[in-house]
Image 1: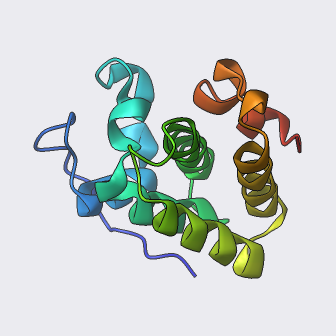
Image 2: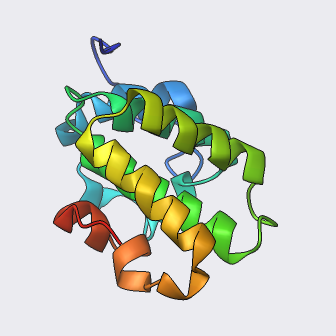
Length: 142
């Protein structure tokens, strides 16, 4: 089940969107196209304050911006793992991975699997795959 906003009125501050704004945009992504967002917007929104929202959007098969949300989850998880969890809490990532394993469809199961693989073997990190959308586009398991 998705929670769709009726109208998206834009971001008050696109560099630091609220969860409500991000969710509203995700169901109407053509209202503010990605190419019009600040540079590296995916990196800007892939932090602790929005990861719960991104996860919910990534889990929603009906969300038009689902792949973007999944892409941001790859960025978030790689950032946490590569910094030995100085950037993001290990516990938060673990809970998201476990929830994806319990409730997710194939693409979310693939994300969870890839997170576990990167945890076990950090040398598998490839910037293109994890931060430029390569794993989301390919659907590949490591």
